Length: 239
Image (cartoon, rainbow, N blue to C red):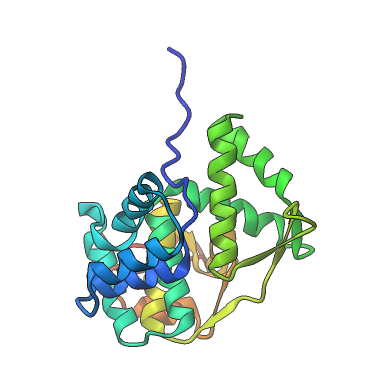
């Protein structure tokens, strides 16, 4: 049996203000007409608009049943803050929890920019092709995720888009949003992660946590802390 490449899923450029509009619709403080007006203003064709709406549905409007509670809790946290950092954190958390492909591109971006602060786009393509196959659809999807990360304030594209520069991480002070983003990351990773390594996990590279992760997690029913050996505290999803 020939193994199939993992599903891509996220293959569209999604602007942060579209996510904000979808969030407000989900929160009941805006209408779908306002979101549709934003998409129309972007000059999208009928097919492109429909595909982008599908992504926005998954991220905020109509999440998968197993993620509906996570998304709804994220919406409520955002409603209480509505800050730029919280908006970016919600978009990022929803994307990595919903679309493993987005998470994988983000993880490679974070890893490759961790040392010198920049990397070649070709290197990200190479790493992704090793996992998802060297296909044209993979290249297009990776470019869409990179463009989305740039729009969401994580990176800047330079040298005619051939290199990426990591931008300064956003400081998150809201403990509830920190815990929610950590939960999203754990859903992407799919296993427990050492507390000390979570802040520096490459998939979370656009964000810096003001309070220790353990503090935010200790007050969150959906997360659990446990010891795995002397001095090795890990964080996991609550059972």
